[in-house]
Length: 618
Image 1 (cartoon, rainbow, N blue to C red):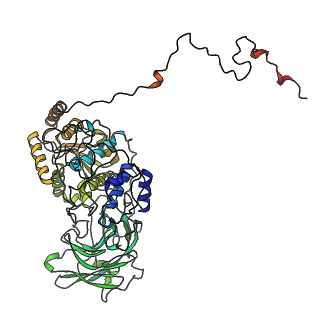
Image 2 (cartoon, helix red, strand yellow):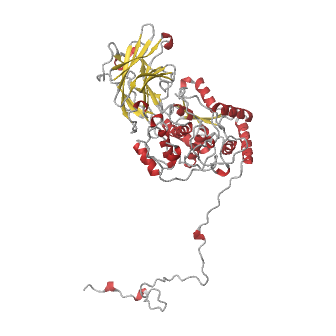
Image 3 (spheres, rainbow, N blue to C red):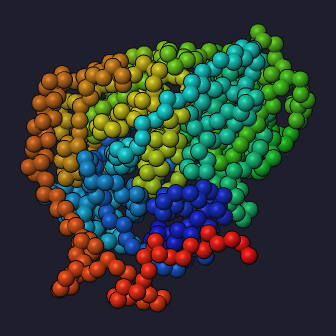
């Protein structure tokens, strides 16, 4: 189904379609359109209901100027790349809620000479024709991030979040889903044996993963996983292998990406009937359906070689991976699950009977003696006082992501989580055009920051954060953390060189007008003891950065066209018609009742009215 057809649907029709698909039907029309478009663009949604024909054509949203693309972060939460590359040139028209034009880049502005954009002056849009994609060029990461930042301008100050410290100390020998080694958008059940994606109803393209607390490096061991429930009511007409649900189960080493199957030492059985490792997929096994149980087994030989194979409902599917001893080199293999739009449950109760009897000679992981399984240790903090948040501040392309990655390598003991749009984008292994996924990722990041503020840990917020209102709101969320602000502000020539390098690498043309407006709205953080404990300038010192920003702002204001404010509409109550002659009397002129309006004075005054209430009751 075309995006133009979805845009023409009424709000009630959009909500009806989303309800039929089992998705969240709340929000503005732009959000509903994007949600339905995202699902319809999934490979398995080619058969979206054909009755989604528009009944009435709605007004076209005005185009917005594209701010520059931010420096790219490594693909994947832990450096993994997505399964496949979606064509970024595919048409995608943004209809997100319009943000107010100050202080950041307003919607639509005149294109400067040489700028690679299709926008016209004055915020007027050329029109979203089906074949036109020029208006979408340059609409990258920074564009959607800045739209989210502007929303903080009118937001209320957040309440101090509740401290969700891990006060309950569970048994270190108990095997469970590890709450410290998971995506923040993966929700672990209270008993530690089940979980599901946190934002499945709003961001259906998001994959969420989690590892167990224990692994093995010897013996013959297995564990069982059940596809508990599918969380989307989408009819796939028997094509479950290509459905909107996803489940991968298998093994990975402790420092591999949480995207199971995307690293070299990450081995997964995919519920579509495939095996995946190192991002490469091969046909294997059978597709999974709701209620199916997968047995995952690892057989270590005495020389260190490993064979990994899987069962589906106690049916042997064949050996999936054969690893030589030189591959693992004695490293621990940890059970791992990755799911999308479904809930999973693992059999982790050592006293409960197995769902299916495993192969002869294999022992369930939970039944192993404590000395034969390895506890995967984590140095993450367990309280807000021990936690730290690093907020990056800088213009797009200034090098914030590069600094954050280098800082994470220099301090591996802190196990920083990098919260950025590109990291979430990598978790959308397939989900439509890049523009649609970028918008979802930036919106999801706003929700994810709130979750991070309630979860002890060390975080790096990899965003522009050039607006004071956005910085203040986010830092207030992390009250109780050690809050550190890092400003990356390179010299002018170096910044231009980095921008050019990112343009060449990402293939997205960034309009100069958007950069100028972003420079006008940018502000540098000041030391505020109530908001932050430390402010660090990574490149230029504070005074030089401040002087350079003043030059940027003055030059940008000189080059930008003047903002034409619309004329105020006249208010009719201020221009009432005045009739000639004396002013009208305040006496009531209604003559429906005799006596009212009688100019002869026949109306008796109030004191002369008969006092019926003084008469005795007859």
